[in-house]
Image 1 (tube, helix red, strand yellow):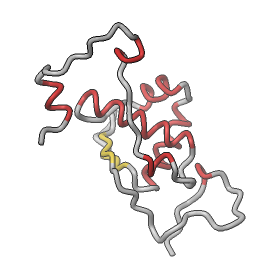
Image 2 (cartoon, helix red, strand yellow):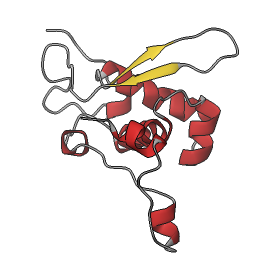
Image 3 (cartoon, rainbow, N blue to C red):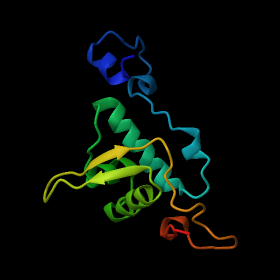
Image 4 (cartoon, rainbow, N blue to C red):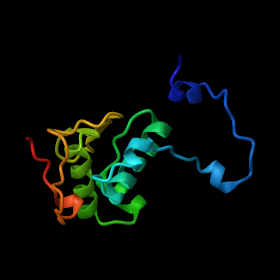
Length: 134
């Protein structure tokens, strides 16, 4: 079975629409991401942005400035959200060196360390919680 990127490269699919929403494309996000209460809304949107870039380009290496612009956030906030995704095991980051964008690998299976990252009654914002190995 071919992956959708290969199919789209062959140009054997074409959207017959003048609808600007459909022409711009869309991104599907797995339900286990959407329903995970330990992942902040911002991190979920960042994950969706990674999926969007990857589906359209077969690989995912956007710069954090690009992500920040597309998400309407500061670069600092995007960096925090990416860190949250990495801690949750949803992405792996390969740093490629000074002046180059990182290469992000998107995972479709949560790799939590030692179970729940949040203790009952803990009011620490999810984006600042450390994942505790038990």
